[in-house]
Image (cartoon, rainbow, N blue to C red; front, side):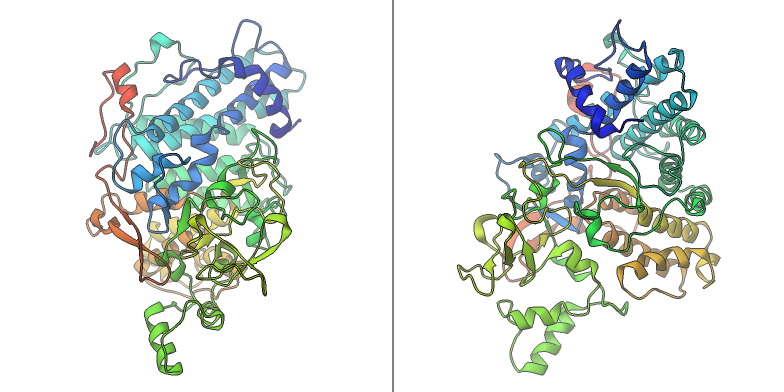
Length: 560
């Protein structure tokens, strides 16, 4: 079967004329009297669902969600820059009319509308290949489930007793019918689970082959496990993840860092990913958001890793890195304070650390292959010297904060600015292994007390691939905290940690929302860069006010 990457080129031409139709309601933009007649129409119709994920609020903004956590920060508040909406959120100034809240909502319902059209029409199309028909129906089911999962995650909540869910549409809907009230989370989840079980029955296994960007049986099983995990159905989640592991279709990629570059993005660790090509309208913007001014995209470091996050990377023997202790020991050993402008001093700080740090972060005096295929050195403060390398530069030439390496194109790999060719994983095998370990640990406290429990094998597989020592045994609480830390490190910059953070701490009486109020400082910790501010609706985004203006039956979420 032709791949999504190729056929989406055709879909754009079919749908471009009606892309702005009914921006606020779930509606398919390619259906018509002459469509849904042939096998080719069925393929194109399903590709149109995938095509929704190319919209900016999905493919380009999901990764940036990490700036809403202690891991990263949305740097720079220029109203003229792409991510101004996120800056208003991290600075505590968003409201229910903030555009990003509306745009993601609209994008998800647009995808649901297209999936509904496909699911109603494809069964009636005469096709010679019944397996292809089942595959297309399974893909549409998977994608509808994914979009509804995202809606619950951001807008609807998981708990019926606390939250009101989201409007539920499972059939094609006309403009005059898009005024349903919110369905409770359990009702929406029931549709998601039904969709995914049907998708599992219909979709093909990858058979150990590299994913082509389409939904597979393994992707549907992994997503179903995630649905159970988010609803704290620990045993059901563990069972589903165990099936993914037992399938043998996936394995950890040998080189962690290469997975987030074009050189290694195609590998058996990827379960489901958003496919990118380095051409206009088919690439991603994460390179532009994460990259630096010395990269091919001349990027702006819109997302920057925080000091807390970088200091969370452990030593390779598994012990914690304590920066205060390191600085005190350095001064005692050398008779002078640590110097951030001294290459030897800084290299000592980062010696023998978790290798994922260097793979994910550009730290002071690290090397980076940037524009013109030149090797740059990230020096602080920035200088104009060319030896041993030209100095890399960040936005405003400050060179005073950590920068992302993950998802940032090297050399001349990204020929079209704003259209990076690097694929974006949505679910990968390491994520499944860590979710499996978490589900096992939460299902029964006794599992953590057993060093032979499979949760340790799953957890340590991720650690071992990274090049850091594994763990042996601990209490349920100790393992819980280690898993949470490991997810932050392993899945950094992939846009998953914000969802993790909210599901872990929503309703946790020990969590204080004001703890998110913090000063964002340069890596020397001497100078203030900006201030992060919490907001009452942190755990659940608002129902966009534009939608409530149209539909008075939509209640608003707490805190808005």
